[in-house]
View 1 (spheres, rainbow, N blue to C red):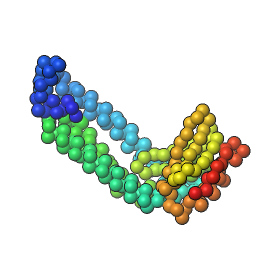
View 2: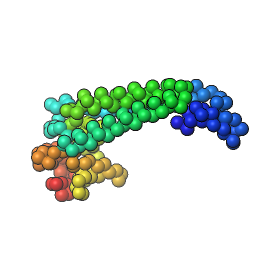
View 3: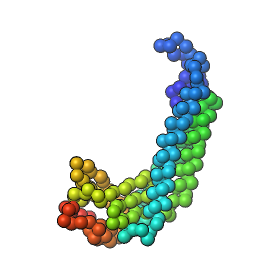
View 4: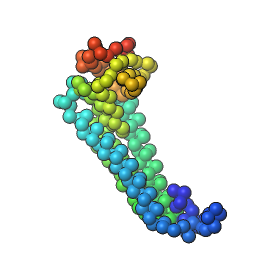
Amino acid sequence: MVLSIFTGFDLPIDSLGITGSEIPYQSVVFLIFGTCIFLIQIRRSSRRWFALTLVNKINQFQWNKPVSQSRKRRVLTYNFIEAGVMIFLGIGLLCISFKTIIPATVYFIFSIDAIIFSIYGKNKFRVGLSTKAILIGDREIILIYFTGLRKISIHQQTIFFDYIENLQLTFPINCIEESNLKEFFDSLESVIDKDRVFLHNIKP
């Protein structure tokens, strides 16, 4: 983004004794920039599409319910904000310099991806609990494995999962509708090996 400003407005770079338009290999730099953005975004997009597909295989889970309405609204809001920001960045890059066509196009592509994901997934965002893990599939993938688990506890609106070697993962309780919480915790207790995992105050 900074490079596009210097090249687009032909600003002087005193430390190099040149102006923005004289920066060498501009096309290559913007190509590399666009490729980096693409790789980051495609990894993120593929992970959340995969999680959404997996969590909707309901018969593979011991317990599986839609996320809470409050979380769904928050996810949709953040997704549309994210799409808007990427559209703004793409337009901004093109307005500054047409040489930024590659990174701008990448932003446009993934803004469309975010919008499609939101529209398609708004009734498919779910939380699933199997004998091996807990999975949330919505804006982000949240995966809590039970392998190596040593302790489960609750503090305020968060479930803490403590593992060997001081690893700790967290799970937001408010992603589950309050009416489904008892069923969720009963299912969680049923799949946990109580001889190996200490359950501390795991009722909300």
